[in-house]
Image 1 (cartoon, rainbow, N blue to C red):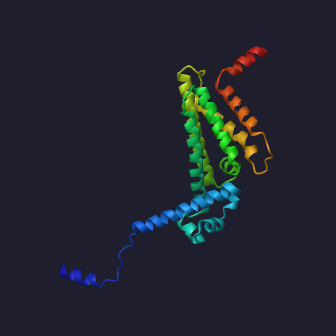
Image 2: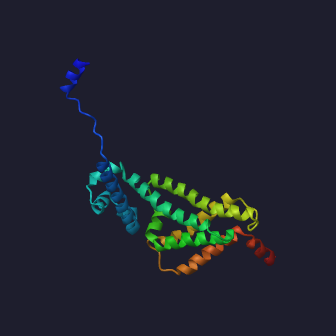
Image 3: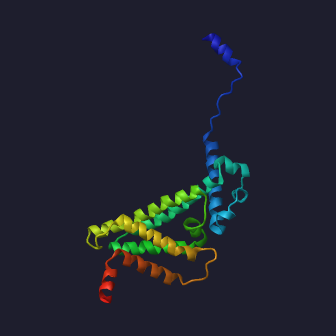
Length: 224
């Protein structure tokens, strides 16, 4: 035992580095600045505007620091996408969880989805339709399911309470999310012209309400 202590005393082996709370906090703060910088650039000019050099400059870090936190630009974009999309999903979910009949909750969620997208068109385009790396596209699929689940919650409640006709809530919700997203592609495109936002939102809400109720069957009956 004494011999081992003597040998270790003169050893050149280094003790493994252990980050302190202070260094971990600095590292986390730098990572947050990088994500915030990328988010701001994407919201202003899309993914093309968020080069690693531009992100580093806005975050106040060296370019190499970006890669220390995110091995690839795709991973950075995926993180930005997750955070931005989660805020949108949370807003829609809050609307579907609100008080009132199921149809009113769905209408509120559709309006929330559309108005938030129109308020931040460039970011909405990046989240909905801008061509992206496969890693980000995979996140799109995850969040489409999350949006659908938010709508499905209100639809299940409506069917169970007899407020809505019998239907597959999951299928209807998935169709609604697809329709809303597709309807917003043009209006949020960087090349979109000015439009009447109120008319667009009202039309989208009407379409979605017809899709979840039996109103359309009454229209066909009257036409016959």
